[in-house]
Image (tube, rainbow, N blue to C red):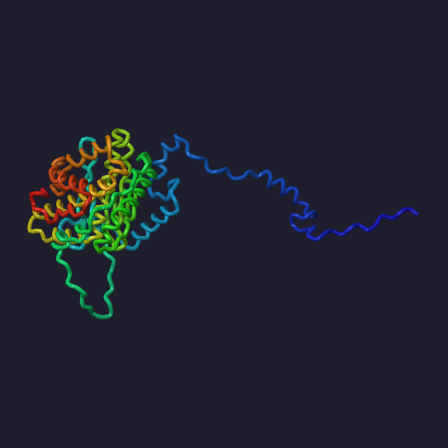
Length: 395
């Protein structure tokens, strides 16, 4: 008898499951998987693409390439800030009087062109009852359950200005702060430059601010396109400082810098260092209570001349603070060669005379040379007491 075939072995466990030996579509699926290409990696930007990067950054920086998650978080925080603290625009009404409450701080005003160097001026912006097209509002303050007595007598504004502890806190230590290597050819580069500079400024000023008895807070950084709305309102080519209880915001323009840099590289590099140092100087004024007290005395000025003098005292001090920092970082930056020549020219040729159409609210060329010169040479905030100086030195 012929041998009969043995029983056929049964299927093994998993035979008919998807992907098992009994899955008739497994081969097809494998083929499909092999045929589907992996997503191509994002190509690196070529030199030509870098030159075209600015239009991609138009509007919010969240749409631009290369922004870190930390910076996206900062932008989200700024958006949330506007939602809470910035109402619909109030129509301009020239007949309404400024309020005494300072909320917007300083605008590094019309940029005065000085022999190829752009000089950042300063204009005070305060909360108003309709004066600004897009003002910030003041957060509401809840009263406690019962009245409380002040723990100490409030300091008079004049004493806050002329006898501030910041003047006795000592020199800024020599700062190991090399000039950031980012050149202002794109918005991202400008952001990176100012971000690195703020880190240096924080390290330089924090010991002095805390020694003087004030709470130190680092300001937020915002880089904007012209006409873009930020926490400081609608921006138009000027660097701004907005004071608030969260530490303040430094908002800086960027769009003119690529052309300026192409025309005069050394002058633009010095201008960027001075501009951010100046606006940061206003931040120091805010931390020390100087900004608010100066605004209060400005509101009490008996006439326009006295009001402008108060503006000049504040602006000259902020520029002196800027020079203190630049002097402290002179060796490490370094400020030498053509950069030193441009810095010296800026100190000695910046002032209200360069734009006769504007009010004399920033200080004369002579006054700038005095205050910036001694701040740069001595690196001591105590040399920047413009509020205790005679009127002849703040002209």
